[in-house]
Image (cartoon, rainbow over all chains, first blue to last red; front, top):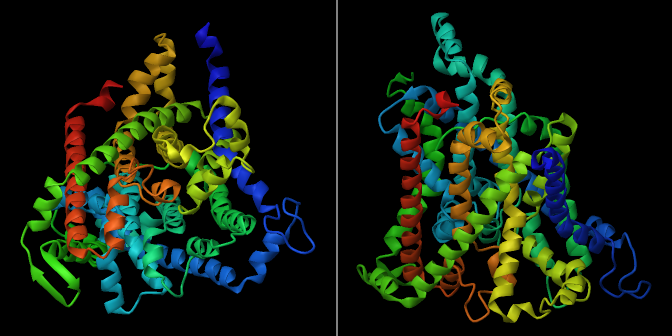
Length: 267
Length: 291
């Protein structure tokens, strides 16, 4: 009896979870189309597109979007090239202290940002990269590099070892092998990794807050700046919704990679 | 078999340099500060382990430690089984897989500082979808003043935000189960529970360890979500470790907050080490062959 009802139960459970997931997002969308501050020609609570117009006309918000895109891209450009050789080493070569080193990397991923905020702020102001998108991009490497190594390592381990050996017999060096043979094999892995870097970096706030006191603000901080004595919550929600759009587009284009299962290595 | 060669170090060197700059140097600075009384950063004097003994003997630290532990325990008992269950519920057909994963992953794309505002507006008794319905079921509209509702809001919010990560990780592990295993199980007459216990669960072990580790640490140090909801209230009932630390940093108590940070890092390191041990034990059991 129960077994026959199983597919039905599964669908119900999944749908219930999706409703739960969407509920706050429905609220978000509704508010983003509602006028929440009274203006001379608009009552509170009426339906409007004004909040979205507000995003476009506010230069701070526009530059915040550009800043966010810039630091996520810079972060990916730093993270992926340093993570690929490291993931290769952890997956193929056993060297002195490899297990401990991997553990140390993972420890940085799970260190709460609030622990390191003060010294990172000091270090970055000594280097002169506070208030810049580059500073945020670099700080986010703290958690993106370990997670990228971890994901990429799973993909590299899935590539048969014979490929390396054939390439070495043909006279390719390890770096040449990674560049010419391994990278095309793990291209989808690199895409998944870049997506995860984007996802963790785009929404992060602790480093983004301390590293941008005056300019270079990302979207999350620009939204924070909208809160005040009279907060236009409709505008806040509209910006939040707009900030999710790049992620949604990426997520949708990555869905087949995610559904085929990205490989995962061990701790 | 892996090749044995210390040339591996040259391959990890770039990653090591980046993490050294953004991780190791700040960490050493924190350890250094934790032994000083600091007025301004140029004038400080050595106090030895005074901050540590002060923190360890203070009830405040242990109270927030206990709250964080309880919170993490609750989060893990909800999110890990729920994540596995939802991952198992995702349908087989390709189109719906993509749709389900996209919908489920949406909360991960919301900027962290907006998540509390989102839930506050959802629970708002005037304009919120839930806020207008819940009072009919006896939910207090002034929930911020009592402990249980505040905890409930933070837990539901965290479940909403992070269960999707567990789902995605588990789902990706489940897709690595070869179809032949399911066919063999069907021939042997295995029920759904046996399929889960002996075929799917062994494939999930490694991923689950990582998911538990990530979820444990992030919930243990919850800050950006807990603080705006009730600022540690009511009456300190949601003063979690990181919220407590945040207050200390805001008050410019560099020395004590550095000592606290070091203690947190020790906890992090211990947990990570325990997990690598757990995985080492798993490696001894030939789960792959058994399945």
